[in-house]
Length: 383
Image: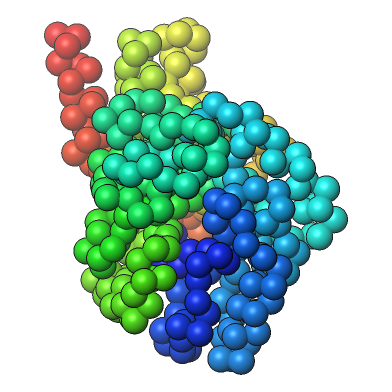
């Protein structure tokens, strides 16, 4: 996924007269919202008029603090649920109040987990929602909350340090959440320099959001945009970044096999940037020599899609598929295969090099060291 930059405008604070965009210098998205209010409808109308007059197309996405901030004038809405707090009003209450209006409007709704991380300041979100942020030192709770969000069906996770945060969400937190989840990862709060933005991208953020800083220093937008362009030109490619992200999720599956005393091989299958199947080695658990990670994941993916063929899918597996799995991958017509560590003793390269679909492509060596070491440590412990 290409890295994106969004600016956040609060209708109560933002001065549109200070914003100026050009065809070659504008954010990917404009988020509109705040914790307290403001006339969202009139603000969005004025913003759209300004963008149109500049002959630009910039999606306007609502970032509402409550139900009354909804307006059908926007292009989309982050349908937020504050999962870091335990106030039911912001877990589901405000969502119920706005549900019918959103449904009737036809606006694109993006179910989003809003997760507040302590950024060193008392924020308006904390005051309005009467909730506390998550402790940045409690990495396990943060990651588990994000995993729960994905399992609940959220399409995006928004890690927020809060308006005016002294410290942004750390790269360690972003990296850990990215490794554990596959949905779009949005990061905001306390990002004041292009270097901090690029650090968030490096750690796995898909979208970086900047609000307060641009409200005070709109002239610095071009510096951030130039840094983002430079990042896209010289940083890791979007494909490589995505491959590493999904391979880490395959490694998570391999860890499940390890915990069950199975040979630690894991697999995930992805279509349209969403995981449609997961699996790990279960040959000992099921006493079934065919229960390899790839077979488990293919079965799960076909059940998800309701069909036996997966022509638009990519399969990620931690170890080079064996001849049996390569045959199954070929029969399923999977378009792309990505694996980590090679297996010269049993792998398809040696024993079944033509088993895949004729149009399938193969990428080898993604996170090879981590995948290989996991296998080696397992067999070393068995000796």
